[in-house]
Image (tube, rainbow, N blue to C red; front, top):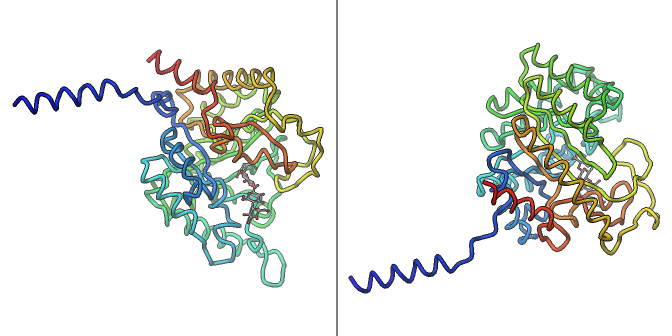
Length: 369
Ligand code: G3I
């Protein structure tokens, strides 16, 4: 009896002496929305083991940054490459995460063969619809019941509210959007289906997305949420305009998701809207190669806080907030549109440490629970 008592006291002492683990991002926001990040190949395959552990610790949702885009997952017609998407989904399941498939229909990183026949001519509407259906059905049914939500159509609308001239629009016509949602729903009736886009604070895009939601719903086609990517800078978008769009989408009876959040501090490089374009390096466009000056870092913190406050204000409408990458070193912002820059857009720094402002926000929330 005495030995058991002594063991019990020892265990109790050990438990009391072990410092409480630092509260995590997902714990801090557990009552409001899921918190997610985008995984790159090194994180999916465990080459970046440190990141993997931290992602599993802090996030309860993940999205594939590139490996599920058509140029990567169906590089040749009928030949699918699941070598990254399978372990991506497995990682999410092992860590009980809300898994997002990104993205079924996008004009960028589109498999080169998709709109063309063997002679290099554009295929017919019927063939393009068949290819669209085959791509979506193969992917969505493979992960049926395992991927909870899909970015069905990505970036199909321009800031002026017109439909982006893509091969899908040109060859199939406007109904490619509803066909994509329909095919995805048929392949997994339980999966959530999203329309995802950037610059969603622009009035023209806002109004057209509202119209898209109404059109789909009027036809009885499932759409669960609108993804507001929110790739933002220090002076865009205007938070009031972003809030107008957020509330306009929610008013249509869909969820809102912040799907690709990052905040660049780098000067805007003027170029076209085509995300695959690049601009030659210029030193003056890369002002902080060795770290942000205090005043810039402070401004970034304030910018981040202003949007966290907005997300929390509308936590009844927002179901997920996802950062577009784990740490600053991973971000596409370092290389687009000008390769070789140093940006600081994400929640974890280049040393994979949680940024102080994020830790402060976590602590404030945990202490106020
Ligand atoms: O995989 C190749 C590799 O084999 C090659 O050696 C290397 C060098 O050229 O390129 C690699 O492909 C790159 C790919 O990312 C994977 O790393 C492409 O060049 C590069 O263009 C591609 O960039 C991605 C970009 O989408 C493409 O448009 C970014 O990582 C990704 O973060 C970004 O994400 C998009 C979202 O999907 C949609 N919303 C906008 C967002 C930012 O553009």
